[in-house]
Amino acid sequence: MIKKISAAASLVITLTLSSGVVVAEDLAEAILTPFRQKEIVPVDNKQYKEECGSCHYAYPPGLLPSKSWEKLLTAEALKKHFGENAELDADTLKVIHDYAIANAADKSYHKRSRKIAVATENTEAPLRITEVRYIKRKHHEIPEKMIKGNKDVKSLSYCDACHTQANKGVFDEDTVKIPNYPNWDD
Image (cartoon, rainbow, N blue to C red):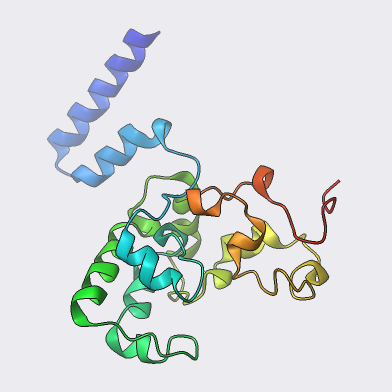
């Protein structure tokens, strides 16, 4: 069985490369698809974590596509970042910008990030994670009183209020605990 799969993979790679149609990224995706991680790459950049996390949860870049990060992480946009002045010096902004772009949903091979990338590819760049169609769909069953009416959650933008392993890039249902509603999904 393995010989058949290996032979088929070799044939596909040979035909693909000889046709000149596929670029290395497409080939990498085809090869890596079965080995993708399920969730999202956790934030592992100290400067990103410190700067962004000083005001709010430091969202993993894989929760938005690069076109969103391009709009959010400009000097002008940070002057009025959701009603706050979040200006950064040019060097810090470059580090954070480059990190977010390199780890954006459309650059990731993690399954949840890929779903976000697909959900945003033919849309205007969402500026809020809560505007992403995929994210809205994943939260549609949660009653508003458990989010907006919950003093310990307030909004879907507080991912880490309910996703107990958000800092590890894990957003699956098994790790959700809605504050003040311990048995909400039973």
